[in-house]
Structures are given as C-alpha cells and as structure tokens.
Length: 200
Image (cartoon, rainbow, N blue to C red; front, side, top):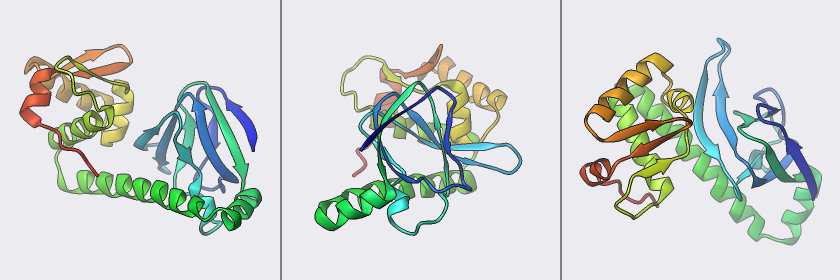
C-alpha cells in the first residue's frame, strides 16, 4: 500500500484514464463527476474520509467512466491494480466490499439520470437536498449542515449557478434552507415537512 497526496483541484484521473488502482481516502474529500466534452460537469457525489474510489479497476481494466478531482488537500492510501488482484485471491471479502462501492456509485448515477430526465429544477433541488440530509444523518432538531458549496450543488443538479441560486433563494424565503459561505443548512422545518427516509 502506498501513500499518495493531492493538492486541492488536482485531477486524480479522468474518463480517458484507467484509475491504476484502488484509493482509500484518509483525509480530505474528492469530487466524483462526469466531465462533458462541452466543459460542463455533473457532480454525482462527494467522496469523503474512509471511502473508496477507483474500484472499477478490479472489473474490466478499461478507462474510468467518471473523473475524480481533489476537492481539498487529499491524503489517500493507494493499492496498485496488480497488488489488488493478488489480495482479492487471498481475501475473498475484498470482492464484496468492492461490489458494494460499485453498487453505490451505480445507484448515484441512475439517480442523477432519473432526476435530470424526469424532474424540473425545483424538484431536483428538493430531492437532492433530501438525499444529502439522509447522508448527513443528523437526528437533532437543529439546522442540519450540509458540507456542499452552492457551486457544487449546482453541478450536482446539472444547472447553472444563477438558476440554482434562484431555487435556493425560494427555499430560503420559505425558511426551509439557509445559505452560508461554503455550506448549506437545512432547517428543522425542511426536515419535518419533507421527512427524509433512510435509504438502504
């Protein structure tokens, strides 16, 4: 296992490159996204501490279908593909863990497709906020802090920053949301009215 560090904004791999191995985040976070030929980006999720990425290297050896970029100063443990193959032969439970990560990523991609194709922007924003609230898992009656910037949220919606800010402003005027510098907060009213359910 190797230690690898990346500065904020570093492109770890893109859609034309093979991941080269499996990454485990020790500190920091990364953007798991689709980069379009027109320069647009669709953020599928933010990968955080103790989460894996690059798992696709264990399956078909082809370039990754997504790009991964360091969201902050990122510290990772890295297992090269050849070493990962050896470990899979010795520890069968590794395959189960990799399949779990791959399934989670597939679900994130399918959710993004559903929202982009079948929902208007306001609906997408509300559904995305609900999902982020479930991930934050804060049972308190206080505001729920979501570690995502307004720019990142717009990228997750596949929308412009201007259009996204308009939706966020509407939610804020309805006391469902509070905008802050580099993060969003869902209010107790949002949590009660929308009642996010646990996703298994």
